[in-house]
Image (cartoon, rainbow, N blue to C red):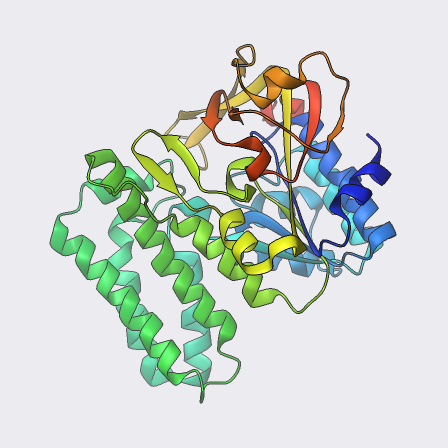
Length: 375
């Protein structure tokens, strides 16, 4: 694709978000690496924020700065939702380490949205150093969330659903007390911002599971909060020091307007928050394709993350969709995308495409990364 064209489209935007209609797609991952290199080498971008756990991202950042380990280990331990485990991601990470000068941050809640424990472990280590008498706050939170803690959001919602209301409320209360303690003591604790953000991530994950439970029960409001999206936006704003930033998120997270995946639920996205905060400094590039294959998730209690990936064929573009409008075109960037829906995994999400995305990257065909299916 013509990256100079993309540079013209993005203009002076300081935060460029690169999407994908689903994870683990070969063409999308390869394009992301090309765009990242272009933005770093030609446009002076110096930070990469990724749809992956904030707590786990520290391992990736340390490795990129020359820390020990192999890229496969980093892709596995330094990312959530298995998003660092493809050959395409290994290529990206290897280039980042060799190039240097680009910081990395995971943006998301911990443990593939399954457990607050990685974040709470970080908070506990901090409090043991600066305020041992306050460790009881985090210990109470750890005890309260352990009954539903799981390897991922593929498992945790079922465990959360088995808790009675007093157990759920006890977990939320313990996490809230921890966050409020850290907020109140922030003026006197040394460098409290990161541990406080970990604590907020733990609380956001707890709230995320409540949101899913409400959706399942049919009790969610028409416009519902999305704690994962809110936390990812808050992570970026915490870390933003005025540098030029590349983000890599699913299209459904980076779009500038709220997303409606169900007729009864509309939720603000990361991009909704960032568009409100940054205006034209934020550039949302959706990435999609006309036909091909995509990944699906199958529950698997024996799998490391509680699910396995499988390949499935995409349906033809839906009438009125962005992909339907682009059928017959070659791969390239689309300056003024149109449509009333866009691919979201194997489905179509209804949205005003022109309002949601500043531009699209379009491929005639997409295919699942072979290295992911080979695992």
